[in-house]
Image (cartoon, rainbow, N blue to C red; front, side, top):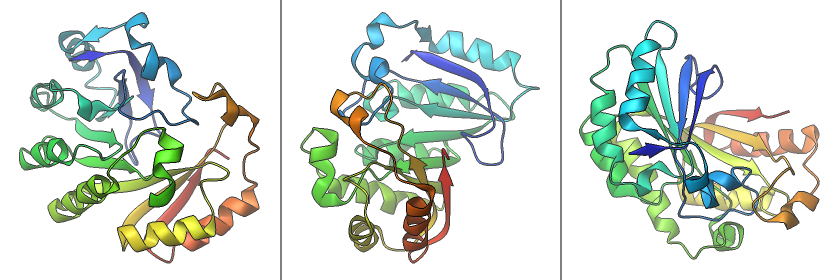
Amino acid sequence: MTFNGIYKTSVVNYPGRVCTVLFVGGCNLKCGYCYNGDLVNNADALESYSSEDILSILKKRQNLIDAVTISGGEPTIYKGLLPFLKELKTLPGFSVKLDTNGLNPDIVKSALEENLIDMIALDIKTSPAKYSTLTAVEIDFSKVLQTLSIIKDYGVDYELRTTAVPGFMSIEDLEEIKAAVGTVTNYHIQQFIPDNTLDPAFSDLYPFSKQELESFRKSILTFAKNCSIKGI
């Protein structure tokens, strides 16, 4: 498996832990607000690390971190993900978190069956009706719900995440999300940053105010036990 980025020390990417974040290139979505455009479209031009490179780096950091987050891009589009996770789990002392858009539920299920991941962050991009507009891809939203159902069934720690993109987050959108996902444990709202977006048109959008984000948080708390706002 090839990685196209590494952030060696983070205290925000894995709740309650100090982690190293690994980034894979490529994605099965083209979200207009995405600020990792190079990872999505130009991964071949970025510095790359093999699985062996990454494992060597992590072995040297065993006394400095206690977790690893695998992000992207979208990690579950790669056949090498599960073999890498198996190798990673041979290193003692690391909890493993996977960031995913949920469109490959079978991969998530296989990883959970083999106890290869300890936490999952599942992106809920927007309300189901607006998904294809925001992601620029026709998708089957039921796959996202299938992934969420698998996560709940296995009892793994998880959080749902939504970036507050103007035009794609409203109280009405959140009501539709609530109807789709049901009761959940942890949810966080990520502030939208109109900088270097994959679709330049999104750079012209003005982010929600703190007060507006707080109103969204209160709405989410009608179906999530916990909800935080990040990026403000």
